[in-house]
Length: 604
Image (tube, rainbow, N blue to C red):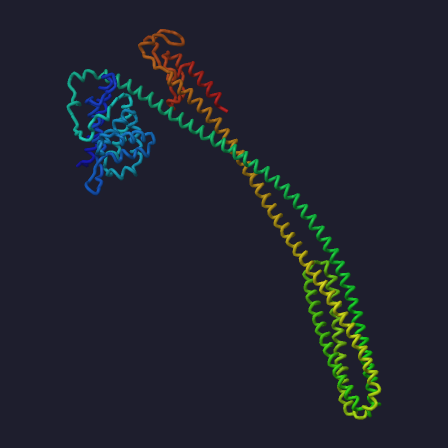
């Protein structure tokens, strides 16, 4: 049992063949442009409407169910850009209210444009998009649709002038009239005429298709040439911009190098100046240390003298036991003086501690400085040794003071005996104490001077630190500039590589352009030859065009497929492939020579 849908498709295909064939034959016999009232044309549109409606899916809407062919025809606008004009004009028509009326108007406009076959071919290729509108067994989804589209190419022979505005396309009833396709006995006798007409139509369709293909190829090649020229101009502009950028980068490179040399020279001058200043400060520091050593030696001498005086006092106290009362008063004074001296000694110790702390800070600061500051570290070590020696001497003095305190306790026992003897010598002791107080004042002034010297040294050290930090910042800036310089060099290399690649690409484009220009010239010449050639009829030619011999039963006529003239077998015994046919075709001797010359000139 056959599938009913397959039977429907076969019937519609046969009806389409009959309607297209009848329309072509009647139009050729009619001999002028067809109007919308022409019956075969109306029947063709009805058959096409039935073919497009076959297997159409029902689309649901809010109010009703829609089943129209306007949906798939509206897709052609997206697939074929030249169909936008038809779709826009159909939408702008004021009398059309239904989608079916718009589809009928679209078919009429496509026939007038002679592009109905091209539009429907785009639809058939896109099966995925058509599946939204048609069932899988629809005519447009099967091979029958492709056959109908192939038959529609023959309609390009017909010239139609249809008025779409005045027609009522919404309310027309699409019924096929089969009476037009029933033949009588009179029509059977005209088969030979139909065969001739069919041969002429085939030749005309073939030539038109060739012209259309050549025009399309020429337009595509023109578009490619334009795009290549635009891309060439863009690449040339980009090359010029890249070259300008390279020149600017080279100038910036030279400037950065000059700035780097200037910065290096400045840093060297700064380093030399700082070295000279550091050496001068070290010398001043050495001189100040020598003065301090001298002051410490003088303090030691004074302490020794005091110890000798105390020993003398002890001897005198042993002799003057009778002067106890006077000695008590003197001892009280001595105790006061001793307390004051102890306070001064404590102050000296604090000052020594401060000196130690300052020396430690100087030692730490001098460690951070450069290799030229090693001499300072050695001097600070010597000073620390000297301070340790001073501490040792101070400890010895403390021990002696303890011994003196013990002696004082022993002397208190003997105060009663020494009071009488001490009165006479108390005055002399007071004088000696006043002298010692003066010496202490001198020592205090010397210590103040040393403090001022140390403050000046600290200020100088701070200045040195600031200079060192500035030098470090400058060195870091130099390092950063070197890194930036390296980055710029890398960018320069990259730009050079890009320029080389672009030049290679330009060379390749130039070669391709030359090849495409040669191809375009060949195609233009072939097109001119096709447009200019005229297919001579057999009746018009009685002699060969080259040898001018008369044709007979033995000398038969042969057409040249390049120029269209008629020649004998001897003058057209050549075969070459042409742009219209890739297979080798009969060509006359003159066309054979011209085509071979052209091929040899095109070969690189």
